[in-house]
Image (cartoon, rainbow, N blue to C red):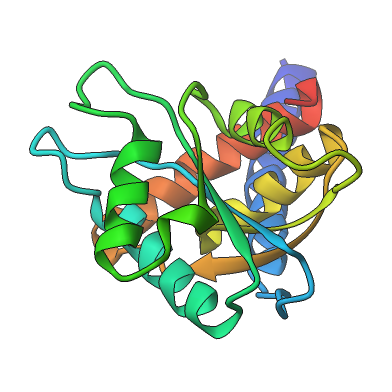
Length: 190
């Protein structure tokens, strides 16, 4: 009986420590490192509302991208995201329209419309890069950057990153979900 209780205490302690370790991993990955040296930017997709407008998380990514693209006019952008079952269009097409409406030249925008996960975002976006290009900048919400950088490395990309603010309305849920997704990524590699 004594060993059984000790086992439960140890198990709970490991879960507690794992929770905080994953949180620290997410936190340390949130630092923006992009400086315009990479010629390609990948914006990772996020939810599109049934009305066809970007969710607040996606809108924040796009606003950060617009600022970056206006500052570094040589940078090309890949908007990456397929169509979810409750989305009226691909995330990529919604992002492209948003950027165009904000004054970004359509010739700078490349669409990747088949991905359904962060891993696929990066894998399929890599196929749109010119041969030999492996260095890119990634924009996603701040909580998501650690996993995005890790998965980029898995598919053979070297990255710098820009974190968009995560809306307060989804921050807690996003951080909890991201801990589980990061753990899964570390265990299974994608």
